[in-house]
Amino acid sequence: MGNSKKPVRPRSLLAGMFKSFDSSVVKEGMGNVAQVLSGSRNYYALVILFWVAVYASSIVALDAIRIGYHEAYGVTREIPWGLMISSYIFFVVTSTGLCIVSAIGHVFGVKQFMPIAKRAVFISIVTICSGFVVILLEVENPFRMLLYNAISPNLTSNIWWMGTLYGVYLVFMVIEFGLLQFNLSKYAMAAGLVALISGIAAHSNLGAIFGMLHAREFWYGPYMPIYFIVSAMMSGCAAIILFTWAAYKINHKQMEDTMRGAISAVAKLSALLIAVIMFFTVWKVITGTVSPAKEEVISSFVNGKYAVNFWVFEVGLGMVIPFALLLISKWKNMTMMVVASAMMIVGIFVMRYDLVVFGQIVSVFYELGVNEYKDLLSYSPSFHEMGIVAGAIGLTVLTFLLGEKVFKGHESDIH
Image 1 (tube, rainbow, N blue to C red):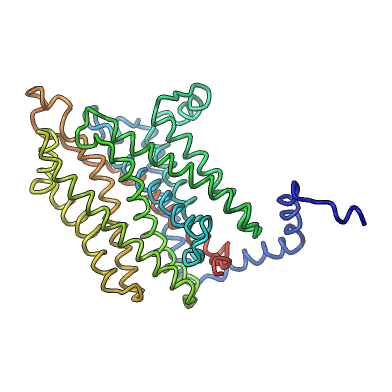
Image 2: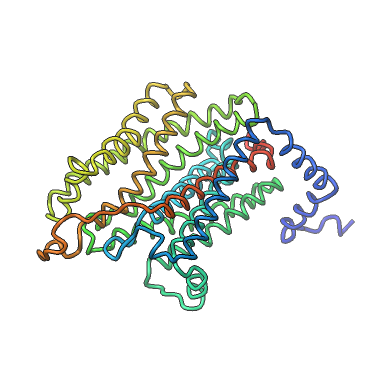
């Protein structure tokens, strides 16, 4: 009798996991296999398509390693950061945004956001891994980087803190998702909180990498970490709306009222975040007139050679059209919200590219009047860079497709 009343709190986590891990787990695993095999013809066509994209990208990546990154990539000494850096930022920004959006419901208990929490956590893990793949192929000696990151840390480096914190973030996101599979919500919430804190800290460090570069006037400023966090939430909202809609199409299910309510809430948040990013963009252009070097960059995308990137993709697809569609949808028209989200993702991808490249097209010697660097610099992505980035996108979509079947459409999201 006495033993039956003993508290088991210190072991409750393991006890819950082992209690869940019985013969039913084996049956569930077999059910997952059957679930993957139950896909439609269109589903398998998409899986094969994106698997081929990943396979082809792997060949391109190996060829880049064979011939050397200096020959394979289009970056130069003057513009050392190109498409792969901007794509890495795109993936980790989206991952952080998904983490924040999922935390609104899962960690902070806002009921409207709870139905999308589990899928958001899963896609957050997928996108951060895709970002890591891109950055590891961008760094010439990735294993040396990982080794010295551990044995020779530079605590004064924003890049070191970013990499380390993103590592912690990924670990706790995986733990959170695993705990959710065992329905251990209390412990998953704690892991999610740690992941949220480390993710925001890592992302603000990513913004500080740009904002603290005094030599690059287009980037320099204290608002960059804040801009990165806000734009991350914008990316996360767009991603979860688009992926949730695609998930229901893949699984041939009718969207429940609770999920529609969650998508509506996310769409409202998206509209607010777009308005905030518009505010940042306007002031970015206005403040560009205070410095000759920064004014050159602003002119290049307001009425110069990069005007299409800025007006069509950043402003049009990234902000104005999605904002209008979301308002017109009145948070009920699913088609409009999905189209707006797809446009946002395309616009945000170009926005990351423009942020990285525009900050480098004016040489650091510009104001010194050096004849060799008196004009704007140029950069074009190479075939290898585009191939690797296409593979990372393919990896993201492929993992999402398989995850929808393996985890049965994240059915436990609906509360």
